[in-house]
Amino acid sequence: MRFSVVIPLYNKARFVQSGVQSVLAQTLPPHEVIVIDDGSTDGGADALAHVTDPRVRIVRQDNAGVSATRNRGIAMATGDWVAFLDADDAYHPEFLAALARAHAACPEADVLATRHRTVYEPTGLPLEPWAVPEPFCEVELVEDLRLRWMKNTPLCSSSVAVRKARLMQMTTWFVEGESYGEDLDMWFRLGDQAPVAVVNGCYATVRASVPGSLSSFGCRQVPPPFVLRMREQALDGTIPSRYHDSALWFVAQYHITLAREALAAGDRKRALQRLIEARYCSWSVRWQLTALMALFMPGSWAAKWQSWRVRSADSFAQEPV
Image 1: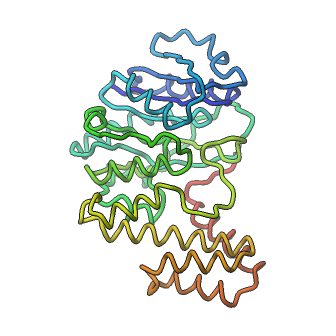
Image 2: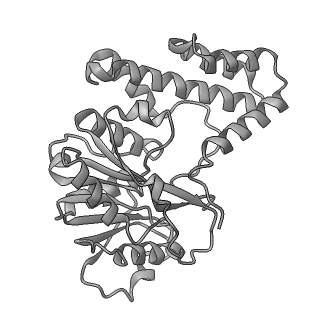
Image 3: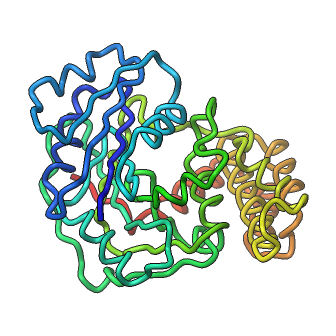
């Protein structure tokens, strides 16, 4: 298997060397590593000036956003599979080998992925290889990615690879001009077309709390464009009918999350508005519990509840360094 690894780089000079080295250290060597410097102002590409490995290609461009940057990497890739790695993240040495195992177990899958862990390490120091617990390393074939996502997060942008032939059949890759949720939009659209094979072991590391990180965001007041599109596409038949219910359910659950975040911020009116938008699942325990919180729970209690819930949901993936 020939993996092309695409690394979008924007103002991550102190991290990108560690990320690139984690790709070059793979036990299953990558076919190529494409680093696209999206108009960095911190000399990001210069941090790789000493890298002489011929598999590493460094491209500079004017700032165009993460979606356009990933799309350019896809267009340049010459491998059979295109993997992605954010510049401040890293692969376990066995990451690509784990994807190869997933392909062997589920050859019909056009998306291969592993679970990931989250660390709090903002200095850019190389991450030492971490132990992967063997009991969690079975390969899972995911037929409905949205339904699976609501159980727990099975993959992220730094733990996934897509068959190049499948990408070439798509009319739209990452939606350009969007920088939050553009990756989820891509994975769900791919999941609508073909199964996803996930290795249930953490073979990628995501750095949290890095300034400017693609995965960091504050309290959201409105759903991102991909959620609004998902609802429209479920209703107009763009999304295959077998995924209609799970798509609308995912959208409703997203609105419930926004309602809880609004409560944590002390905005009951906005929380109730979001619950109305989530009325598709108003019979669910999660919706009804959130409604009770919005109507009766003091704001400070709601904030503590939301903080505890997020920590509990992420406990599998998070690991302090």
